Image (cartoon, rainbow, N blue to C red; front, side, top):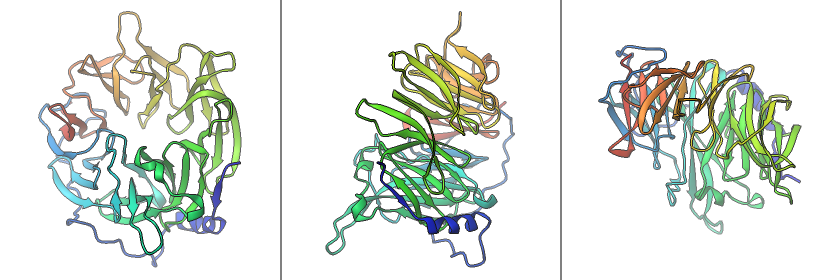
Length: 409
């Protein structure tokens, strides 16, 4: 039986908040630094860019996966806080830190990947942090999650939300060694993955927890359905399940398999791989209503990851990017796969607006997302985040520093 905390009364407030914010909204809290609107991009725009200037602008230290680029505004999430910058100039717009002390005992395993949501037409970036709440009186110190909720248009801190646990539920001690991740958001409801198998949905406008499930690992949000995996049973099998966003009620259970992996793959489906009862590995697409499509068996490795290009194509990799394959993000139809005769599979770093970015033996390359053919064999860098104005990439001489490379073609 899954333990789930539900706050039904809060759901009504969430629906009302999603329709728009009223005049009684509290003013945003003060943030470190002096935020200012990002400047109008002065660099040329290419949609998508296939070449980048070799010399870039250093923006600060963060893991390559803990960054987000929106236009020319970069959100760089380090272990101690998040810096918002005008990537084209390197000018800081704001430096935002959690109210509680971030947990950095195992920085290699932690993560603070910023995620863009759009509550009521107000683009917002949410950045998660595992934090420690100090002891007070007879209450022992404990671990929690704090969200930085940032206005995506100017980098100002809108609010912070602390996701705490009641004593009977147990704290989030497991977050010290595992990433805290924002799975997705719809309206003001944000889905969090905490540790290996805890899912919490919180309303970032009120700070209220809508529900918590200690035996469910969320992988994707398809519309208003949270898709993920249940905790392993006695035979180490996990069920691919869809839960309602607002109350956590089970909507469907698609299949139960061993060694299952899920990856978000755009707005229409989730990609799944696993092992069948006969021991063979399989691949399938799981749709919003729980139906399966394109199920096939084969030598599908572990280590599934997918990237939606925010247009029409989803590109996935298994293991060390082999195979690398592309799907139509609406129909799920196969488009291409590498390696193929006479061609190698690149290690994918990003996909955006019809382009796939990556490296082959350390050399950057850009593929056409629809055909898989080479678009550029000398793009300059292999970015981890891309817009029409440029890309973010790790500094080759210092892997902890993120550099913005303006688009050159």
